[in-house]
Image (cartoon, rainbow, N blue to C red; front, side, top):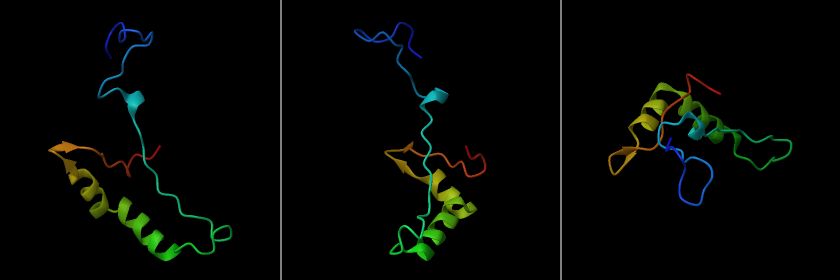
Length: 78
């Protein structure tokens, strides 16, 4: 955290590594009663893959310009 904040901003600025910046992504399957048109089987396969060892490895390996953008967390759900 930067001490003293930014000029014109009373709150201190947050920096990489601050746990308050954690931004989790979740996969939620739609309720088939409310959304009967939903493609439940492909969605279930995708959700299962995301939390599988292979899916978690793919998330861990994803980088843009050498920077890791996402961190797998299926073993530590919120």
